[in-house]
Length: 430
Image 1: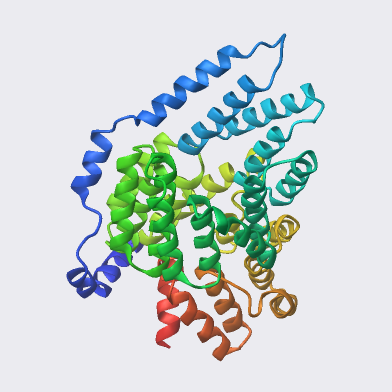
Image 2: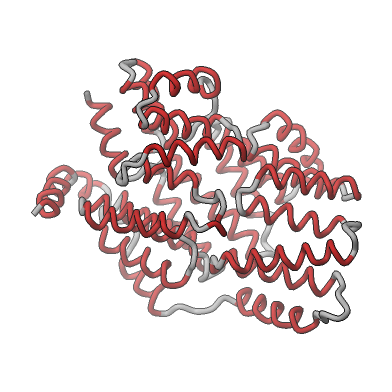
């Protein structure tokens, strides 16, 4: 009965919106995508490469080239199908190369740096890159990885220095990173323009072009232009039918714009069947939340937590676990512990916002406000963190501050979970 009432309320609240905003994600397109699924050429080629290089490895005569190529193919497969064991095996192979050559080669350290970044082990990535630099690497590789690490660690002035060094190459790597830098500085239009330009510079690589277009799609969602986002996601899927990130994002648009939880559920379950990462479970938790089915929401939240807290994932899902622990599962002490640990991995305004909000939800209001004053105030935040700070200020009785944060969060409302978006709308009306 509760679900029926919730569904009726949504229908009454949004009829005009549905008339004025036609559906963006067509059910027919999704039917075709699921029922006529093909394997991309690059996926087939990577599987062939993986087997080829694996068979060339001789345990009795360990080397570098065959092992490195095999590790690279494993990481490529992970990026498509999400089996974390592929990354772990690749790292094992790379460490074996280091052992064979007594850590005298830079290339294994470079690959391990990229792998650490992929898994959100940012401080470790910093250490690994320094080892590679001590051995000797070229300027381009040094600048790209130095930017990536310092950017993730919140060392934005240092990241800017390396970005300026990359400008001379005037290539995909430069514009891709310039987009990220513009985004963190709140220049969303420039960030979109830069990312689209990066895509245009990768015409000969469907893989790189797809990554840039998908990132541009995400930026359009940040900006609230979901129709353009969907156009780009479709291009990405055309380039690579195994682009499960773009497919998932179509499900998200179907959920938050089209209000079609049935179609979004179908999309998320399709991705869940094809990709082994915990991400589809998080989206299914959000779908159940939008539907107003608390039992289903809690079920998917628990399933996500069970999978995302597997030690193999490390800190990859801290942000999402904090949302669930401070929300449907109501375990703020766990959120606080995770957020505190994350500060040892990367201490940025965003991660401090996770910590402050976790403290606030765990009824440590004075501590939460001190963290805000010392580490968050004036820092670059995105929709989720702006919402958190708005709720915190609201709870601290600072109405003006709360409203300012809510107004800023509203610009990125499509980044918020359904209940957050609804709560935000109500707060701005009061």
